[in-house]
Length: 356
Image 1 (tube, rainbow, N blue to C red):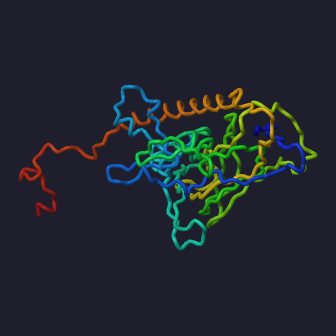
Image 2 (cartoon, helix red, strand yellow; image 1 turned 45 degrees about the horizontal axis):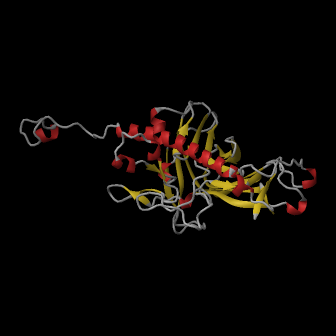
Image 3 (cartoon, rainbow, N blue to C red; image 1 turned 90 degrees about the vertical axis):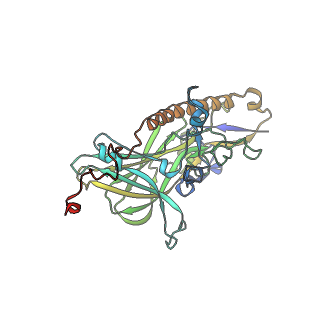
């Protein structure tokens, strides 16, 4: 029987011989192609691994057909560009968007032929500091159980192999067992824009932090790296705090988006960017040790905490998406007015050229 030993995020290790740093892919945008939930034209709209059904938060007034449409995912076109007040206007909101950007098969990169995240942001041309956040359509759940989805995006029951695992791990936005973060990297294509790029992460306490990756003033693919200036490599100089072994939740890091900041003195108008992935190098937060009593089987405290967190995340996510669904349903769909005249009538006005 195995249980866990929890230490502080600042210093998770008891001895130098146990010091372990691990590299993990936090999010890989080449995995987020739309491959399920086809529209009336047969074009997939959602990503099967990350599709979420938010009809569970809808009221009883919705029909079954309406609830079947209440799905979203981390498919690249579902991501959003959120502008700050200095950059927000009707034109910039309408034109700022995220798309799936195909990389040429002939490109000299390992992900040639795949789709990466493509971003367009319309920054103001006047001298104002402005920024844009590129965020998923929903706050990525940290405790959503891993299970397959069918062609309609309906989540199936977890298999025996999937039990105990979570949906958004393995490059879909969440890395678990994260202690002190040592480094963060982002693979991006620069387009000679002088804007600053930040990576946004949220921890298990719900605290969001941003990490400056550098500017985008270069041309071509590049891996930008943030190194923790406060990371202590020598365990002998770390402050060691020992906390109770049980019960504490396993710390994690969650991707909440990018932030692109444009200085007032820099060029405005369109910004174009491409992003492939975000990786982290971190200390392990949990050391595994053999114990004589299976604490979790006896008390179930961690399991209850995780279920409560998962239910809270789904409720917040669902309410937001239902409101968006209602707003979309109320939008005008007509592209032009219906004519009050007969289409082929000789009484209709003729253009000047036709009259001649």
